[in-house]
Length: 617
Image 1 (cartoon, rainbow, N blue to C red):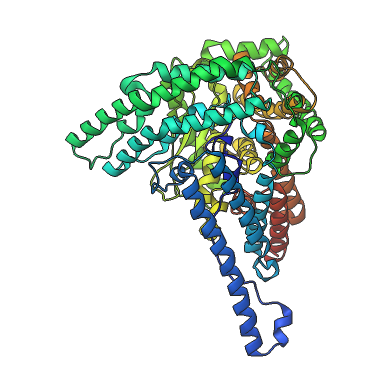
Image 2 (cartoon, rainbow, N blue to C red):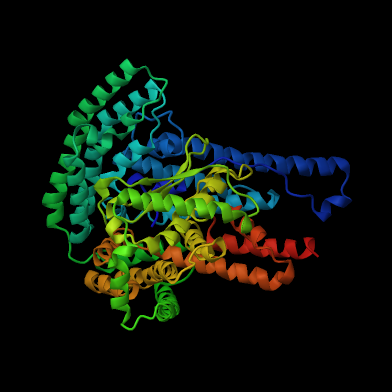
């Protein structure tokens, strides 16, 4: 699922993953050796620790500010509109400078005396270094980084501008004028990307035909929506109430002209290239094994997305195991419902029986909102603290089509905007009522919204940790959150339990299919057939999902791998603490680290168990 704007795409370059950061300060607790020192010596040691911590946070501050300057789109999504009239420079010269900046930050971070830091700063430093090392591993993989067209619903070249505009503030005239300036700059942005796409094409890196077809469909949808129906006009439908009506009218007129003169011609230029010479080189198969250097790219992506040392073969085996476990749960539900046929007929019945379907998209959205309200009231049972930021449910843009997967947008860091569960209202015919509880738990609460809104409020952590996009942690938490539905009053009837198990087996099947495609040479057709057979989901939706896995190798692995690690740590804590185990405190221990790598999360929870075992005796 997720999420775009939760995951940083190749559109702003892999370097953007390494952008930081400002954060907490603090002294390392005085160790035993200082007890024997004189007061001047102790004072000198404390001063040294203070200086090291200050240097660390100066680096975080500098990196964060530099990132906002180099990547204005990212800054906008962070709530910083100082450069809301510009795009990041995608020229070869600037790209080289960006990589040099990452190397410079890595060198500076490695010079920090880690032993002089407190435990929290040590984790922050380790993460800062790891993020840069991971990103630099992709620097030589030019062709892989040049495939910025994607079948994903978010985070790709062809839809990124519309997404950015939806995230852009329009409270003031100045902010609206910034958007108009960005529209005027958009043709240059597209021209730069066309150069990069051609470079990737020359290196043998073009997405498969199925992905190209989805890209063209998204572009056609944008080009067909003209005037005030255009997705690019969206910011001007919510101009600030403080802007006089006459000025609002002027701004809206300017927007219509800018869209017609700048944005749509650039999209047509992009479409012409994609439909012509680019599509001509599109392979039938999109597995990474067929691309030059593709095996190395997949290995790097698996490492980055799972933050574990698991191999693709090991992940494939885990997926098969989890599919078998969850199929047994589904068969139990089938027995409860007294179904006499096989799984395929059961899934077909559940997906087509009118009593399980909404009449329209608005009814679908209303049901999601009702489920969210019911969950909200139950959250204190499982969480010691809840975030202050609110969330809403809204329809995804129609340009993404009825098969696009739901996703979530986090709240603005400044608290001036809510989180958003973006639901596919256009696809209401393939979103049965029984599937909605598990999806709400994943995308809203206690999933993405609870985790990301809480992270934003962790003021003692550096900003990069509060806004990190670690897939295995973020998607792992959201997939784990689905399982908490049983304790939150969900899944009370057999149909909704089927919905939950189907959602879970879908995530398990991803482990099999992603590794099958990119490591074992599966065809797209084999992957689609397997997903349909295992999950019972709509074939068109599964085709969309497989194209998503082809577009973003390794991303789909984070969901189940992350969930399994959180469950493993929970059971470890329960066993170690016995009657002293408190699920509410455990969940805060997981959430209050920010989106850390799974290796870091494991160390943090082990430390928490040690503290709890002493403190709660």
